[in-house]
Length: 474
Ligand code: ARG
Image (cartoon, rainbow, N blue to C red):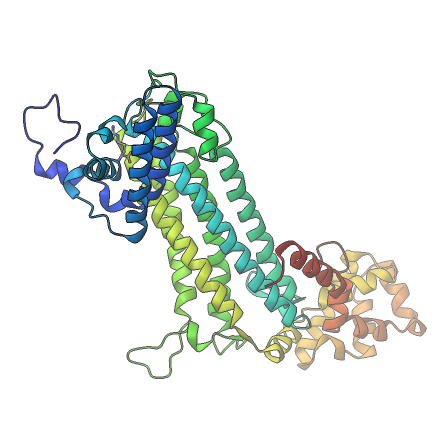
């Protein structure tokens, strides 16, 4: 049974068999394992180690096996430990003893490293597509709500009004970086360990360049010991995924707050809400909550992988087997989170009037008013004092900043010991009250933020157009 059992006389303890087995997890590598085996077989043929007829027989057998794997028809035998042994045995059952030549010049160590790079490369391509889909959903919502205003916060307190589109585009920026990190990882991982053997290389004249090219790799790895034990690419993908999950979690957190009726900013569609078993009134944004919760698991996977690597001497050590549940689990969670949030955002209803009303609260235009005073020659520190006094006056009277009287403006201007402010206070003809009230509207405050990266509508429209250009329609 044990395909490595030649030197053993005793049986393996059943607990060890159970403990070391990985087929339940690494069966996911089957298609990649077969692809790698095909490249290896052709390489053995090119090196004259296999006869052309043997190459043909093995390739044909592997093709048949690939179809079986694709159809889910392979019965994985737990006694065969892992996907590599299972496929080799299945190949032998299919085409006979020539299958026993497959593992020439190869170890499971370079084999699994090759398989995992192929798997990860495909996973990255899927993830990047899923991120693009989510970015498109955010951009679509921003385009639909291009006029919508909300109170931007710092310290969770009302700070300055911003366009909702600007807020959403902040997440698009994060996701663009996330996509870039995955693309970086893909570039670095795209080398072929095949031909590295167990750790020292292969004792056959294998053309590693050729087999690397055949598998779509940029070239062979440069050092066999590194090749069989390097899982940096797993760490890089886990790090990129953990950070992106953190970004998704931040948006998920905002959506949970915004959908609370006390905010009433958004309504999550029925399709993305769930109810309570006890409280008939409940509509819960559970998908968003679970994205937030599962970000924790992604962070844990990254730290677990780093922990696995930190104590490993060269070269391959069995600890490395446990990279797969971490990577597979994180990729699945990340992909599912992107899918569910994409749908949630696509179907999200926005209450623009509620957002706008909230932006009018909390004196969110105070900074814009201070800036208007600066425009009249007042030093910013003094303008800050003046507007602070105006906020206090407006708050005491229960009015907004755009409803302060000329008298209140005059008093506030005099409240500073600053020369410029005093000059302006005495210059009633300059219409200071009118200037400040005009600057205090939400629209004026937003329009004033007219710098690259600012929330002025002209800037946001340009940013939105360039995001749309980058991402394509959809
Ligand atoms: N299941 C192993 C892994 O994932 C495959 C390589 C095993 N190599 C070995 N010498 N036992 O790392």
